[in-house]
Length: 107
Image (cartoon, rainbow, N blue to C red; front, side, top):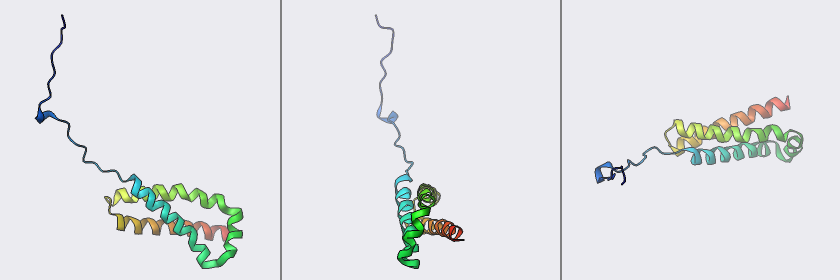
């Protein structure tokens, strides 16, 4: 003989839907796009000679990619998923990081 009870779930006890949204994917995409934008700005400002500069310093600029993605996720999360504002702030932050590194390496 079984010594257990039958458990019934009534409609009032159904699981509550999780209302928490996730901001990681749009923030990561915005962070990566802003890193690409920051990568293209020295080419627009200094021309094709920038390629020779990047030839020896590419690890520094590649290391900024995950930083830009994390900054994009964090800013998108802090701004409660407002895509336009987070895109602008992330782009400004990524360009600022990129330009500081670029100017530091140029001397």
